[in-house]
Amino acid sequence: MADEMMVKELEEVVVRFSGDSGDGMQLAGNIFSTVSATIGNDISTFPDYPADIRAPQGSLTGVSGFQVHIGAEKVYTPGDKCDVLVAMNAAALKTQYKFAKSTACIIIDTDAFQKSDLDKAAFTTDNPIEEMGIKQDVIAAPISQMVKDCLADTGMDNKSMLKCRNMFAVGLVCWLFNRDLNIAEDFIREKFSKKPEIAEANIKVVRAGYDYGHNTHASIAHTYKIESKAAVPGKYMDITGNKATAYGFIAAAEKAGLKLYLGSYPITPATDVLHELSKHKSLGVTTVQCEDEIAGCASAIGASYAGALAVTSTSGPGICLKSEAMNLAVIMELPLVVLDVQRGGPATGLPTKSEQTDLLQVLFGRNGESPMPVIAATSPTDCFDSAYMAAKIALEHMTPVVLLTDAFVANGSGAWKLPKLANYPAITPPYVRPEMSETWTPYQRDPQTGVRYWAVPGTEGFTHVLGGLEKDNKTGAISTDPENHDLMTRLRQQKIANIEVPDVEVEGDKEDAELLIVGFGGTYGHLHAAMDELRANGKKVALAHFKFINPLPKNTATLMKKYKKVVVAEQNMGQFAGYLRMKVDGFVPYQFNQVKGQPFVVNELVNAFTEIINK
Image 1 (cartoon, one colour):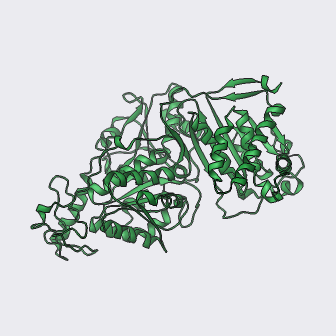
Image 2 (tube, helix red, strand yellow):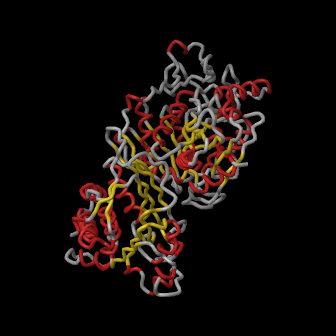
Image 3 (cartoon, rainbow, N blue to C red):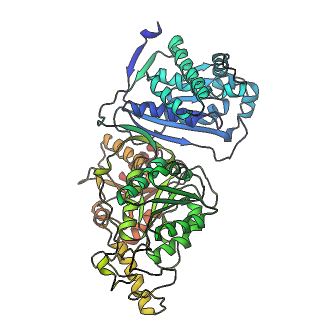
């Protein structure tokens, strides 16, 4: 009997949903990851979008994937390879099979493996399983036909019914891992709240997929469960990096008692932040979709001058365009957060893929001496804290701040414990005080921090003018005096250097590591997983991962010189390694660099780091 199947308990599992870009694989993956996060599993996800705007249906370049790694305890990456591969058409099987483990279970929709589908996927025979040499268990089911049969009495047309077939895969995977369908159904009803008939049709198909597995055993000897072992009590949600970033900005504005303004121009992969913030007018959020990148940044500077927490969001190409306006914020010394969700470049490059190639651009890519704090978020859930901290630094130090995320972190998701805002540090901008009005000038500074005082326009007694021309340190009037310019340049530089940031922490074998792994930003999970695997293999390894790039933590030089071998691993050609060499005298690290538009593969990291240790 189906209900007598043996249930095996697993520590972790990786599931990859794949199909045509119109097959709803991202939604299927989101539902399954949400179900898993809600019951307390730790998760890490990786949506892998095609770069084509809309590739031909069934083509190899149009395959969309969504990978989710579920663990009973902490998981750091979406996984190198999957335990379950859902391939909704022939092209998906052809392109995604390389991500399947040798022990993987493969689920296919046989209705999408007709001759025309096989031809588009460049198969040469009518048996793709045999042609590809697939030896794993394959659940081959006529999913499309079963979906049409399931919805035959709904009055939906054929095209609309087939749009629901991704839900059959969700139901089948939920059965395979003994998931509660009620959570999935609640998600679907909320997702399609304005179209309840569509919601109910999708729920009907989810149940059909679950029942198919339950009633037929689906060619599998066992089903599985993953019980959470280290869950911290609290409310959790599956959150993407972009959504967490948006929430972090809202929280910072609330803490500072300010309105939040976002000036933005849509650009992949940052646009979701604009979409999310536009939903929260009731929280004092104003969003403006501007005519171009320059206007997005310039309007945010205007909002900052008027006393708001101002943000502008973009990706690498937009940073190029915003650079002059960013410099205006530097010389005016106004608070501004510039969100850069990095993607593959140069030029249009790889819009839907991920890199870390904007680091030197945000550090130095402006004319003149233009110091600017830079923070790099380390995971989807860390985007909340990083956005909050970027806003705090901008407001308290009267400076533009760059927050770096990347497509992997921004589109990926994790199980996020809803925080309590009361536990976050206060945000206290350096406002002018009434007693200062008689002697105040626009560039009067706090003697301890070097930060100029903020006079919001309309504050009686503090009328002033700011602009892009250099100003006299004492009067605030336009000045071309060489000594004054040298002084103002040094004051702006010192103000950034004075910012207190936490020391970088070392994880792993802190005292006696044979190798220190160094990284920054969104590679944290992969580097941590590589360290764990190396230590499990008997190697002495440590990890120092940077979130604060400018200014660097004060213990940076000490750590870089403490270990005999140091490797800097990054998704560029060595930008962070070069920056560290510039900042730390005599520092000559090993380097691991990839620019593939894809996350690191843990196994490749382990092999490369082992080779360095053995030298």
